[in-house]
Each structure stands twice: as structure tokens, then as C-alpha cells.
Image 1 (cartoon, rainbow, N blue to C red):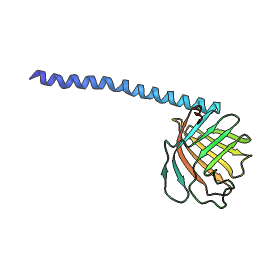
Image 2 (image 1 turned 30 degrees about the horizontal axis):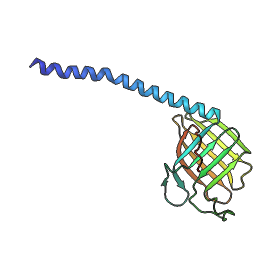
Image 3 (image 1 turned 120 degrees about the vertical axis):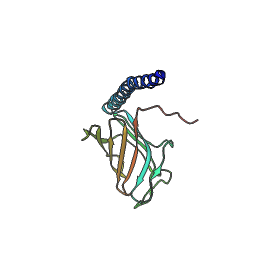
Image 4 (image 1 turned 180 degrees about the vertical axis):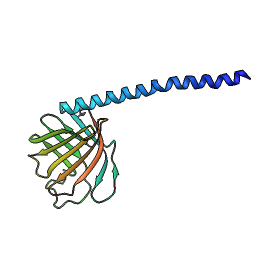
Length: 171
């Protein structure tokens, strides 16, 4: 009978001792991720990978895994994002649908967010359709992007910020 009382006490003691180790490891992983995102933002070399599109009119769409992104480097902003919503004028080149552009002349303003993270404003000077890109990044790397255009309704994206990778060229 004493054995049946002893086993639950042993299990309880083991479980209580293991819990702080798991919590500590989780905190270390979060700190590591936060440091990684901080270094990406400070170096101005990162990719915003869009996972969800939130148009002004219409429904929210999941687009994760489709390769839609916004690549930021010190001298270039490259956008390959979809667009769902109302356009007030048709594009001159119909093959350039969505928000596809490359800008080398832009104003980049970065400031600290209210609850940690960063608020980044990008204003391209050499792209006529896009007025401003506003990227809000959390310390964990989750981000939201709002795009304001001249000839289209505003659109928002949710996704993650990660490090830049070289794209494979198609043959």
C-alpha cells in the first residue's frame, strides 16, 4: 500500500522539477529569435513574406507558400505582392498585375514601436503607383504591411520577416 502512495509523489516531484527547465528553454528561444529579427531590421536586409491578404473590399485570403514577398535591402526595395481590390485606372502593362515593382530611390524611416518592435515607413520616389509602404514588425518577427497607392484602394498584408535568400533563377 505504501508503494501506491510513493509512486504519485515521485511523479509529482519529477514533473515539478522539469517544468522550469522547459520554460527557460522557451525563453531562450524567444530571446534568440528577437535578437535575430533585431539584427535583420538594423542591417536593412530582410524579406517580408506575406501569408494573408486583407483587401479593403472583399474577403481575407490566405496566400502563404505562394512566394509573395517584399524584399528590402539598403539600396533596393523589390515588391512581388498580389492585389485584390478596386483599381481606379488600368495598368499600362497588363503583365505587371498586383504590386510588382523595384525601387532604388526611396525614403526609409525606421522607429521603435510602442510595445517593442519597429515601425518602418518606405516611400518610393521612382514608382508612380505606390505612395507608401508601412511595415509594423514585432520582436518575434511577425509583421503587417499596409500599402497606399495612387490609383488603387489601400491593401494590407500579414506575414513574417525573415532573412534574405538568393532566389533560384529559372532556366
